[in-house]
Image 1 (cartoon, rainbow over the protein chains, first blue to last red):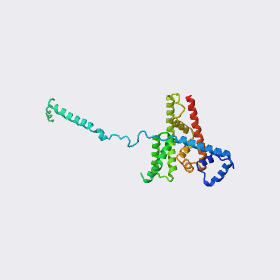
Image 2: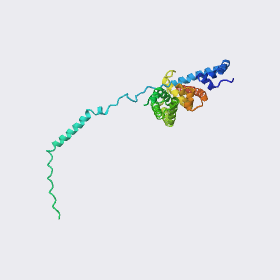
Image 3: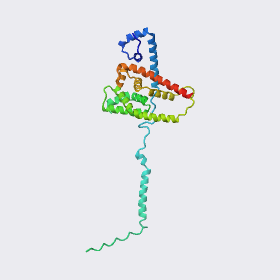
Image 4: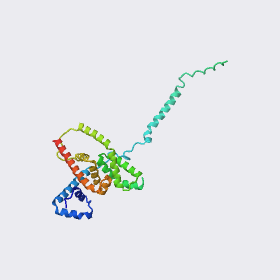
Length: 118
Length: 167
């Protein structure tokens, strides 16, 4: 039997060889030191590669996407100062209008109607 | 959300986000892509969900590849402008250094190899890897052996370059 190829060695490491296919491979490994060494190298390589990939851990979210920091509600942000400001503006406008009523000259009398045309 | 979709989400969301994060290096992007994957699953419920979800996710990553490449180039330019070489503290790797090297190594190997490694790290069987990546089942062992060798070699190369830069 020829030496086991890399794909077969890694499939062995990953437990992906069907049990029915194992006996000839195990028989070869029992008699071939080179393939046993290659199998151990494949096992180490697979472990090292997995360690590298698994070192990339998903970081914790820096800012939750929902429900974390509640946004101020429009109702809460508009009370009480915004409403008070609007009320004050209206009161001032009405007061000024009432106050200047006596200061300003009276409006001119209405113009006489134009003479009738022939 | 239907019960079936809720079950899919509960079973695969965490694994999908993890794989996407490892693939993209961006947690928010990983979350967004995962959302898109589940949105597509809601429209067309898959029969074989695990390979389907991960295949769609990897396709979405590839669709964004050009944009990501542009961002990465800008980032590399920024790094080149801002990096100030200096002595490294002792000879112990910080976690951040290791993560950076792993990312660089993953980016250096072919996409097919990278995807196979990421799927294997999520516990995929050879059959599922073959289905997800469109490989012949008999080719998965060879793909993984090559991918592992390339990843470890690229990682060691990054480490050597960093040591040379530090000395």
